Amino acid sequence: VCKNDIAHAALSEQLKEHSILRIYEAIVHGNLKEDEGTLNAPIGRHPTERKKMSIHAKNPRKAITHYKVLKRFGSYTYIQCTLETGRTHQIRVHMASIGCPIVGDRLYGPKKCPFPRLTGQTLHAKTIGIRHPRTGEWLEISAPLPLYFTRLLESLG
Image (cartoon, rainbow, N blue to C red; front, top):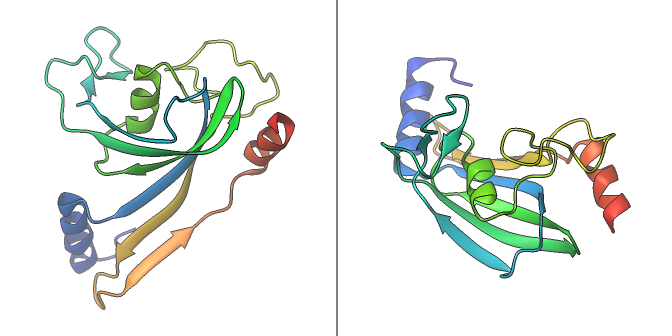
């Protein structure tokens, strides 16, 4: 993303200040009790499985995820997540930690996906917002859901 040192410094500062807007959409297993919530659980390297992250790490770092239910489908819930911090696998780890892993996530969720035709996990970076490094203008960029994701939503509801 950064084409020069000025852009790199500006975006690094925004990351440090937690001023970058990051909104994700996901379909999770289970039915979340609350319509909105905050998961505040530090994340670090899993103590025994080196490819995974965990809320039970020896040296975790602050991690905060805000979620909002968009639609309920009985055994599945369509949610929006906004990151306050940006840890590796943060949403995946947080949702799995409360018993609601991302559908299609074979690392933190069930090894066998209930939707055999699903081509990936149902976690999508929907919107990112940053201040332009030179002008300071607020920029918000959104990406549509991938086809496999929208097809699953249609089949659920």
